[in-house]
Amino acid sequence: MLTELPRSALVVLGMLTIKGPLTPKEISESSKLPARTVSFALRRLVGLKLITKKPNFEDMRQSVYHVRQSELRTLLQEPSAFPLIHWPQALLDWSRKT
Image (cartoon, rainbow, N blue to C red; front, top):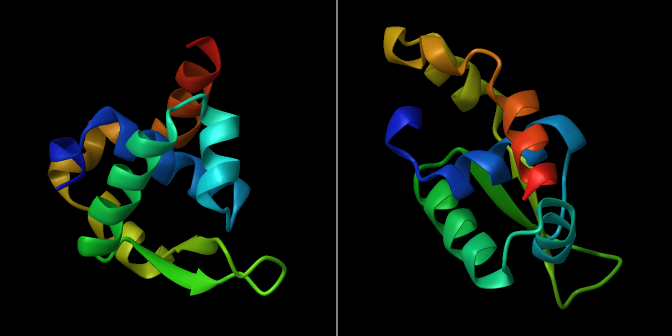
């Protein structure tokens, strides 16, 4: 399933995995991805139940997104995920270059 995700969704998932809970604005600023691209990636990841959306009690205008660690661990154990073992750091490095 991870290999079928667009690169932007993998970047967003990698950021959430490494940095922890983030708002869409924080993801967009850190990754240099357009806000619209981040929103699309977040909707896709929520739909796949890889991340959850929770209220941000510091700023109720934006939600905070969290990785569902158990779901991610299960996916990374699939044989098709082998090329993605080091994906979070590699994708963060890639996002910094763009």
